[in-house]
Length: 393
Image (cartoon, rainbow, N blue to C red):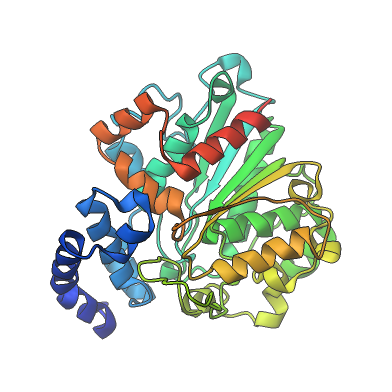
């Protein structure tokens, strides 16, 4: 029987004090997040919710996650089937393979093949399952796309194996490649990857896998437990990076003068160490620690960043991981001649689209309000919706 860890237990026992402190701050001096970001204005719920999540960051073991937190993504399809974002979605929850699900097939049958698909890789340090806010976030992403492009878009998500169940590198890359190849085999020729945090790392890894098949074979063929397919495959046309976790096992370098309280980016390297457990850092770094790569050798053949396709790159001003993300931007656009359409949200924290903005859409009323207002005031939703509207044929 797995017992709760002392570290996690302490956080559980001290949680009431965190909630009380947040409530008092909200009604007096204001929380750090409330003072920095309008997303937290007029919402005690959002301030308390983020304080609770922040309280547990880096204070759990893998077994804590597996026993007390884990939920498979398929549960969300049942839970939110009647949500305004889900109503009328064709194929909602249908399986593509054992780990991949349709969020929406095209509502126009003539577009069911040969057109645009969006494949979502969720964040969570490769340890934590997809949160409900991430599930609602990818639904909201679909609805943020203007018509007629939205009707041409198909959306799928991967519920990859997690390190809380001791599934380590390169399990997630294998499953992501299998999901991607399923879409290609089904006839989709214009595929955009979207990943938040660890999901952004995964999107980067498989985009390099596809663009550099010989390097991929050299790297991954040693992992004999997987039935790898190194045959050529169509590249992703575009990538949407939401607060990508570019240095998983490296302690982040903080931006001087920035108050990172409340940010949900991991401040240590423990989650990344769990991810690559059983492998040496030096052996896997080119597909994990994206900041040790260089543009000419590792990215110049990746269509999504070399100018043949497009990449949208969004992060927050107050992120713990901001320095690393900006190093990667420079690696692509300054050290190399690649292209990233980069946006930094003023006062933004880690993974704003999927952890913050989506909180307003969790119930039916909030979801309907977002649809009626066309996601008015939602920084990341609007950037992503505009981007997808432009790249969908």
